[in-house]
Image (cartoon, rainbow, N blue to C red):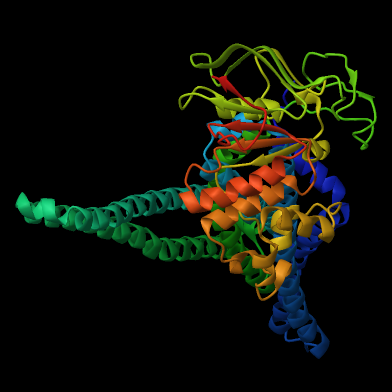
Length: 567
């Protein structure tokens, strides 16, 4: 059963893993809130002493300035801890996403563009990061700050406390109104700027057609309209921004004035609102402190609302169906082992992954496969390939040749039928065993971020330098590599090989782990005749003693027992 809110589980797991950071963040936020309350209280005592014409100790003055400094330090520490807390959440979330990525079936990557997947790790995670750094945590801290200030005002004057309870929600609603208006204007401006940015290259691209059709004036007017939209939206945003602060200052002044007037009245009203001069100064300081967190709370609510879409997309990603993975009891693939897949029909087997002398190497039995309900790629496909045999699949584009490779590799799971490799269901072969079984040469070579040696080994520590060099010699690249400045340690960005040489490097990568089965995916489709001859010569050496399965690529009689299977 899918977890409806896996993001919450990731956050909970991250918090438990980083208990010290979580506790420290809570402690620092609490100290920051408390520390902000003390300077006005000390100032109250100083003012009351002055009005009573009492001497003021230099220590109390130093204490006042020290408390202001401590309050500032804790405020900065709070911001640091919130940032660190957010980074821990972000790291935990990206780790969970990366782990999920390794568990997704190949079909997920065929249905989703790379940009969409990348956006989960970048844009959506950044939005969720703001949910914690500039959203929930900051909003909770600011709410407690406002509450603590109102509690102190209540303690000092019941009447003024009730007045603040009445005024604070109105201030918050006004703040949210201005923020929504400003956000709407900013969105309108971004839309207008996007139109401008799209209009200019489109105009340049179609300049000849615009000139031939005498549409220069029309395009100019459209550009002016887009610019005017941007200016109007910007002006509106600037207007709200410019009048907000004066309104807040005016309202705070009115609130303070009302407080002072009510406090100065006689009779029962004075007893309800009455306060000393020092207390009045402290109250003014507290009132001024209320407006900043109120403004922040409005922005934090906006951040939380914006982050909800990112949370939804991340939950959808984490709830994606995972590929069926089997766990072999031993890493020694030459030993017999019973394999039980997860979340797939159990097909009891007790067979070696390494082919035996008397068994077929690859078996398809009544296999059906479709990427969706409407388009069936393979239907009731059956064939067997023996150990050491060379087989080529031929057929039109879209007939399912590459799909067969994915089924052999265990990347796809058939809707019907069985695919077996040396008597073991292909989906049941563990990932860490596949490189010893399969060598896969694609149509084009894909560089990884590493040295030339790592292009061949793919960071497999079990592959020695001697094996890397042997693979390079097999395909005829050893001398070319030695001619490079850093030989096998040349960084990927400095490898200046031709297309054909990269294809040879691809063959070296496929055979370095000495696999039993070699899969060739139209690897000479884009090569000239001279380069093709060199690649075919390397392939002939690489294919010796192996089962070879290729797509639309005949070895022109170079493999003695080549067989064609039409798809």
